[in-house]
Amino acid sequence: MPAGGPTGGHVLRRALGDQRRRIAVASILGMAHQVCEAMVPVVIGLVIDEAVATGSSGALLRWLLVLAALFFILSTCYRNSARLTESAAERAAHRIRLDLGDRVLDPRGGADAGRLPGALTAVATGDARRVGSVASAMPYAISALAGLAVSAVALLRVSVPLGLLVLLGVPPLLWLGHRISRPLERRSETEQERAAHASGVAADLVAGLRVLKGIGAEPAAVSRYRVTSRDSLAAALRAARSRAWHDGAILALTGVFIAVIGLVGAHLAMRGTISVGDLVAAVGLAQYLLGPFQLLTYVNGEFAQGRASADRIAEVLASPPSVTAGTAALPDPVAGRLRLRGVTHGALRGVDLDIAPGSLVGVVAKDPAVANDLLLCLGRERDPDEGGIELDGVPLTELAPEDARRAILVAHHDADLFEHSLLDNVRAATDDDTTDVEPALAAATADEVAEALPQGVDTVLGERGRSLSGGQRQRVALARALAADPPVLVVHDPTTAVDTVTESRIADRLRHLRRDRTTILVTTSPALLAGTDRVVMLDGGAVAAEGPHPELVAAHEAYRTAVLA
Image (cartoon, rainbow, N blue to C red):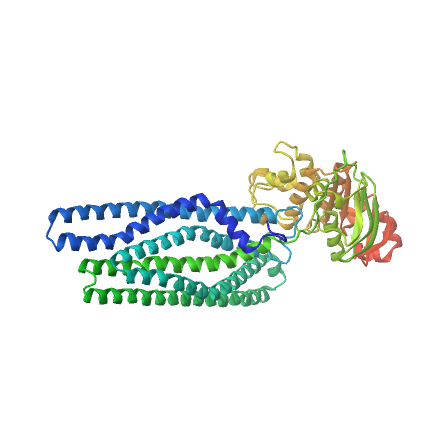
C-alpha cells in the first residue's frame, strides 16, 4: 500500500489484480471472438475470388463451412467471455465493498468523519459498481485491440497501404479518445459526490422524520432536500452531456477513419491494384472496425468514470483513524477503577475524576456537548487532546480500541435497534445465544415490553425499532447494554421517554443488577441519580461539584436547577 494510504490508482489495480485470472481467460475468449469476426469479411472475399468468380461449387462449399465454423466459435467465445467479464465486475465490486466495510467498521474509526451515513452507502454501492465495471471493461479493451491488430494484418495482406493506414491511424485515435475522456472523468466525480451527498441528506431526513413532524419542520426539511437534489440533478445532467459529447466525438472520429479506409480501398480497386474480392474484404473489414472502436469508446468512458469513483473510494480507505491502536493488555480481571486526569477534549476542560471499582456514579452535564465529549473519550472513539484516562492503572490510549470498548461499554442515548427480534436485539452484545438475558430484561423493564408484543421476545422489530414507542425502544436498548455485563458500563439518558413510575423501578433494579460492577449514569433524571453512590456535576466542561444526590440538591443551586427544573 502506498505511503499515506491507498490512492485511486491503487484501488483500480487492486480491483483488476484480484480478478486477473477471470480477466485473462475472458480476454483470450474475447480475442478469439474478435479474430473470428475479423476473418468473416476476409473469408467472404475469398468466396468471391475463389468460388463465385471461378464457378467452383467445391470451393464455395469449403468456404461456407469455414464461415459456419467461424460463427460457431465467435458466438461460443462471446457468451463465455461475457459471463466471465460480468463475474469479474461483480466480484471486484464485492471485494471493494468488503474493504470499505472493514474500513468503516475499523475500531479506530475515522472513516465517517465529515460524511453522512448515506454518503458512505453511495460510495459502497455506486462507486464500487463503477470500479467493478473497469474489471469487466478490461477484456473488452484487450479483445478490441486484438481485433484491430488482426484487421490490420488482413488489410496488409490485401494491400500494404490499407494495412499501414490502420496501423498508423489507430494510435492517434486512441490518444484523442483519452484526451476527450478527461472532462467526463471530472464531471463523473462531481456527479458521484453530489449524488452521495443527496443520498446522505435523504437518509438523515428519513431517520429523523418523526422528530421533524413533531416540531413542524417538514417544510424546511423538504426545502433543504430540494436544493440538494437539484444540485445532484444538475451534476448528473452535466455528466450525461459530457458522456454524450464524448461518445459522439469518438464515433465521429471513427466514422471518418473508416470512410478513409473505404475510399482508399475503392481507389485501389479502380486502379486494378486489388481484386473485387479484396475490395469486398477491405470494405467488410472497414465496417468491422466500427465494432472494436465502439468497444474502445465504451471502455474509455468506463475507465474515466471508474477512475473518478476509485478516487472517492480511496478517500474513504485512506481516512486517518480517530484513535491510535494500543498494544497493552487488559488487566485480568478488570476491576473497573477509572481515573480521569486533566481530560481536555472538545467541550471538556481539565476534568479530574476518580471512580472506584463497583461504584454507581451519576454525572450531570448542563451542556449536552460536554456529555457527548465525555462519552466519546470514555468509549475511546476519541482520545483526549490533553490529559488521560486510566482503567485499573492502564491508560486507555495504550489499549487497542476494541479491548477498551470490551471493558468500557458506552450505551449512547440515541442507540438504534436492529430489524430482528427483541431477543436478538438484547443478545446482540453478548458472547453467544445461550446467555441468560432475563435479568437484563427485568432490570430494564423490557420484559413488560415483550409481554405487550404479539410474539413476546420473538417479535421482529421494525427498522431501527420504529414499531415500538420511544420509551419501549429505550428500555430494550438499556436491556441490551445490561445483558453485555461489561466491567464498566456508561449509560447516557436511558429513560428520557419512560414514565416516572417505570423509571423508579429501573433505577432500583439497575442498582441491584450492577452491584459490584462499575456503572456511570450520565443523566439529569432525579430518579436515577437518587440511586447512585455519588453524583459529579460538570459545568463549563469541568467538575463543579460532587457528592450524594440529596446533598447536592439541598446545597447547590446550579445542580438543583439542572436536575429539578
